[in-house]
Length: 543
Image 1 (tube, rainbow, N blue to C red):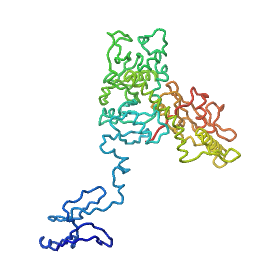
Image 2: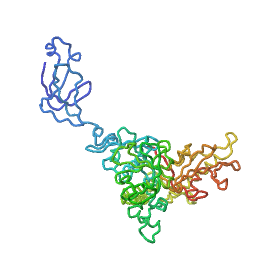
Image 3: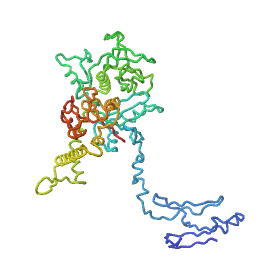
Image 4: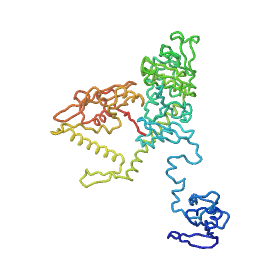
């Protein structure tokens, strides 16, 4: 039975539904049942479907529902090809351009970005979308925003090869995806997001990084110019003095090490086949600086049997890391190793490093200039600083500098009250030490002495880099680990009691502090018994 009708409204299951235009009412099962040879009726009885008489169905938009038949029988075609247009009450949920899930987890449409995984120092990782030409500086800036870091400078991407013990800091101008393309697909190479304060430290203190004993005699081309002036002029012109000295070189395919005299020049790395002779007939070409990268070697004594811990290596930059391609060298001390690795970077990149250093300084000044403005806008949007010290009642602090000072003083006053409360004698539980240091970024818990040195070396051997850890040899004591002149020093912090109150000291009680936070703040502006003030806390960021 088939008939046509034109209706404007139709009542289905008690709900009113408007249908525009002509429609066809089809009762299936009566005539088709005979054709199928007495088959059972479809869906247990007759079915009702609506089909428009217009042959050309309208184009389906993302806000229109699409009719999908619940069940089909073989040999029977559906007479319903589309459904009438019904307005979508939630178009913003169906629009890919407005979907928050697509914006955060997938790249924009028609984008050639690639997904890259970056690890934090806590071994957790974060996946980010990176464009082909993105530099290490741009990726670091993106990670600073996503990780909500307090400061935006001195961050770096570290290329780490855990199995081989190799690591190097990517230069700010290097394209990250190009570096990643040279890795082996079966390797465990990764990028680590961390602090690095020593990236451009040789521009600030060139004499410390390039000792006079390691500068080649042929580099002294200016009569009457001191060594420090020569180094300074060469660095600011985008080059480096020629470096020379003895290094321990690992023999290929052997565990033996041989002491060899090396020369590092703009044309490449050379070694002398006869002592420290500089004659051309005694010089042997080792490597080209344009096609190699220099890495620091971690745990070199265990992995390669190195005679000292101050090991580095060079390898071709365009090839995957293979053990047979590594040229492993070992220095006598940290200053010698730092001199060689810094000279490799300067000879390879030249003026580009100077441009990177200037860019980092200019961005730091711009951040400092806008810091007060940003803090003012945030305070206006959230809280208002008040001063209740006067007799006339409270007043609003308009000056951002004064507001920051008031906030800092209030925090210090609260800490003193809390430390005093915790240090008072208690008959039940005894003296309770203050634990406010556990929330500070420079506190690293019970890490070992060797691990503390590795953390500081990883973030840059600059004067004033420090962390505080629990002593593993002395109970209830702490250790201040500090970097000075490329060396790591350790100072024991001892608890002491006076009149029932607990304090901390590093000079046998001459200077006491109510907690470790006060100790750090004091030595950030006073050297005390330390060789240098505390400047850069060694922090670990979780992504």
